[in-house]
Length: 78
View 1 (cartoon, rainbow, N blue to C red):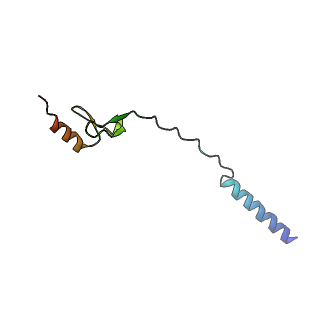
View 2 (cartoon, rainbow, N blue to C red):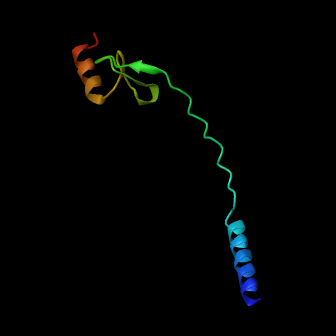
């Protein structure tokens, strides 16, 4: 009889513990993907990059500061 009471107590404790830890958890809703950005070509080398990563300069946009400098040195304004 004592064994049955201990077994019932253990099962009840495990059930309560499982229930208090969340039991069945629902997965979080899927994250909304970021809006796509237009791709722009570097005026110096032609590589395409997202609009937010492009560096503006004279004559267009550039993928890096060295390319912007090289383009502006090769194409001086009059």
